[in-house]
Length: 498
Image (cartoon, rainbow, N blue to C red):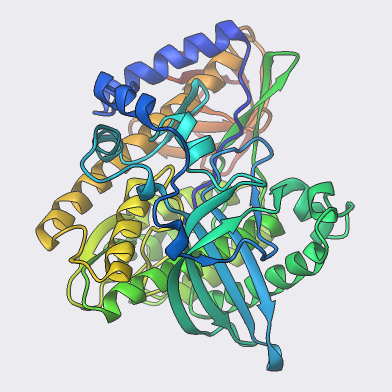
């Protein structure tokens, strides 16, 4: 289970498709209490910003000579983090994760910050991206762009051969991204299925950097999974475009490069939480509580012959998930989604005066902030400000009452953004199939209750309601269905069993 945000590709659909989906996205955002547009005051502030932050740069340590790199989507330009490493005797590795200092450009309480605080997150939809901060900032002036010197907060720690962290510290620095890399090509190289990406090949020693960071990530991953971390597979298809026309939907596959970044970011988020806690500074934690509906998870696992203990046990749940992934890969995404829903949503809470929080059940970590994506998540920007307060010897940037109020607000707004993105994935699926009424598809029954029966089509991976012939087919049954109607605005697809 990953809590590292995955950004969809920025590929536009056919103009008419794109505009229709954009209109739906704007409507749904407004319905959910999100603002799709920047207010005039924020745009006026943006116009006054001359460029990247330079104030105080002389007081920062100079780490521009390290072999930093970013790994993200092929077309991402809002680069929040870059990484580097140093091998130490005895198998330990020093990991450095540099996070863009967005606060150096967007100060607390300014109009741009107020807009970011309202939405709390960038919203990624098939109708376009609604960034938390305007693109001239997030993709340029506050981005850790290749070849550009930037100010950053550096989360610095040692990872031992067993994956344990030590020597944790945080400091400000000047950094330069030496290689902008992408998940698919880095993963292909790591897995022996492709060449070293050209931007990495141009930097001496970058191949070794990537190998060592990948090895460290696997150490961290093994340690988390030994502690009971969960790995799910849920379908969140992205648009596939050819010659400007939306032609399909495909899920983004997991790979070694994504795991590399996810593990280093989970570790850095733990460092930020402990850094603040050790200094008696309240922090906003991202948590997934021990499931209150564990009995329902136990009962659900039993329908597959799985046996879970009576009390929440993440290690036992992961063993069940691993078995289902191996034995029933076709249905595993639906099993994953059911378990995720039964576990309950993630939320933000405030840890006061070093008091331990409930932790993150899915990631199997106790200390966890959001701090590694300040261009696109407000909690990360907030955490960066708290860390900077400590480094400057100043009072915390946010009081405990402010943090409590913001934690509740960020939880609500992030949930709203998730619902917008889910709605637009469904609308994109309906739009893609809107000219295929009467077409036949292979599908699997994903849910059944008194309100109806739902099926998931394999190609493209979309879900809809079985409105005819729904008596009888149980969950997990494969069947042929015919598309009988679509509703693009609401993201509905209706099928009839053949």
